[in-house]
Image (cartoon, rainbow, N blue to C red):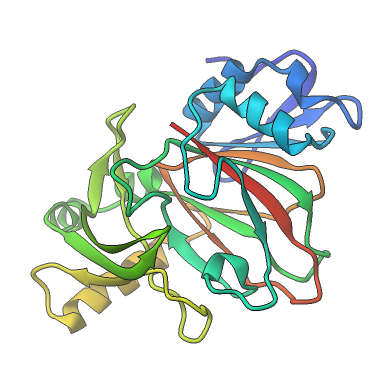
Length: 268
């Protein structure tokens, strides 16, 4: 598929993804065909759209709905990602958020995240969002590693999990529901002392705690390699669409005195 789209400048991100920039500052994003953007997100895994005018909340929802069905949450279509003074969940704190996929505790995970940045952190204060292309990680694994990963299942347990508690077991290697390409389904544990509310504890089935921790540590190192990982430094007005099946995502810690306000919704 051609990456050309009328009204914007396009260019590759490194090491994966596609950047779309408005030709005129403050251009209305809605002049771009919504289904065309979804097709580009499907092809590239990650789209960063910069230089467009912010959309009011209702207009943001309506534009996203033109791409496909909006994935429902108990909190509504849009989640306001902003730090709380007394956060009860790691998403609303200022610490790091480990790599994970959204919807692990739901019957079906969403296909895409769609973000709008209303206020970006001050430069140099953190708050970047990391994306890891797990299809690259799997493709570059040795035959021995891949054979080992194929046999792994991981159970995640949480008392309160987005928003349901309970436990879920996921195969480490999972086919992408659209492309069939093998992906990694892994939600890394948070760093010690970084989360006011641990999202989940994990257990590698069939392995001792020591063996399981060793496996996860090796995967963590692989996921953070520059060849597999893109770190997005937000600017006011950024829009971003990410494939929730192919990519894992997380957040760098940021200064409590720095603003950071994203709006996020999910699409099937």
